[in-house]
Length: 353
Image 1 (cartoon, helix red, strand yellow):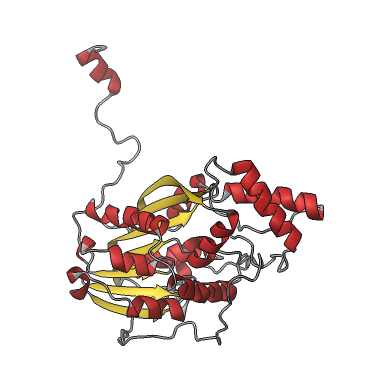
Image 2 (cartoon, rainbow, N blue to C red):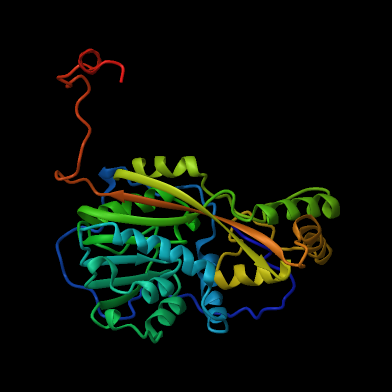
């Protein structure tokens, strides 16, 4: 997903020195002879050689989003997605004492968890040091959170700093769609889970910001005579089930929701994307956006999609994924040809009713 990286210089860009990718904020490491889930090459885990996204730029965008979050109230769209993810814990009778929350929406998840899932130890991880610090320093008025042992680490979803078979639950909300190797990141999540552990994920789907894609394309064709990638490629709904299966999860489940958010103008949409840390991070992005193209995009957006009240809509498609690590207690399909009763016999016995 993206937006316009250089659409006016209205917002201050925060400069940060590079930090070590796996710096720990609070003590949460213990010595163990078990291997990390990134070490297991025999499980089909291979890092993608094709770099679609600039992960270092994405970390800086997350740093900037931290500052912008401090100037705004809670995001109703992000909160709605987080609630949908956490609601799935209420459908499970199983408890998840040790849980890892991957980057994307770690602060709303911590705020809205409210004791769901029977979590006793919670690990919050993000690529941005500032985002993790914001989550750690947040004041939460929830008695349930006080009972949870919470630790905070800076890490990358593409190289999970977690031991194999150490977690009961992995939650990733609105973060994995920025990884260069999405199947590999999901494989690492499965390796980190204990048998019968649960993976809950939410990513933005291909229909996200379809209005902005159209407006941006038309404006570039009109003003520049061609188009360049301004919004990142996103997974389609049909791909989500294949991702879970390829990663080795059992009992895969996929469903999709679409949210339409109304903004006062296209510029407010761009501000919202910056606050979420969802601006363009493509490696092959055009780093310069002409002022006239930006103005044309905003004008086309409002003329094509603007409502009577002057607002403009933006569509967000969210794909929810659920998968379990294999365990002998899970239901399995019977072997083909193992049936002992024929449907023809049933039909003869009960007739056509």
